[in-house]
Image 1 (cartoon, rainbow, N blue to C red):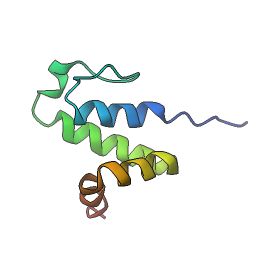
Image 2 (image 1 turned 60 degrees about the vertical axis):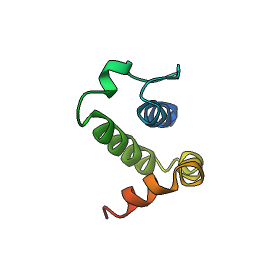
Image 3 (image 1 turned 90 degrees about the vertical axis):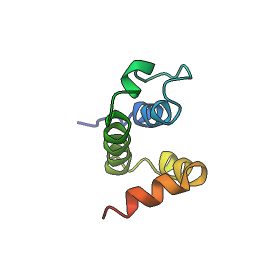
Length: 78
């Protein structure tokens, strides 16, 4: 059985966290969600882990290019 990888939601959720829900993205939470303490950090970590686990190199490359500090902080966890 072949399972198709659809990792669009992971990247979309990361971007939603970064912009505090200010932009209408395909997969995101409401602005109110992002102002709750700790939600941004938990969501970004979970979605970065998922992007890495699914080996979504296109998203990883995009994040390295546009958010190098975030990616460095994530990689420093290991």
